[in-house]
Length: 83
Image 1 (cartoon, rainbow, N blue to C red):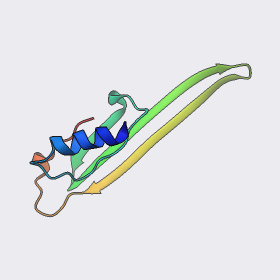
Image 2: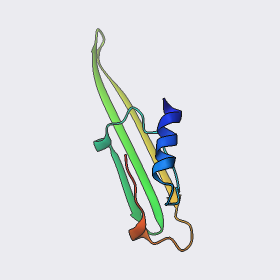
Image 3: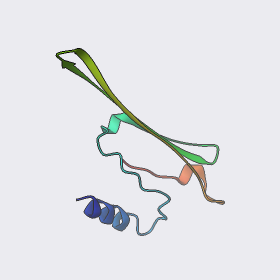
């Protein structure tokens, strides 16, 4: 369940400070990009599906864009993330 995944993540980060937790369910790991630059963590996730229907091709597209400012004193090189 989602709550169990959150609890595992929080337990795994007990000696680190957790800045953010994002739900990227429905995205493959290679569709999620995380960049740490200019004092910010930038997350981009994009997913596109193509379907053949009686009316022709249809597309389903979803994306997430999130930008989080790092707290003062946090070194960009020390930021860790996982998908």
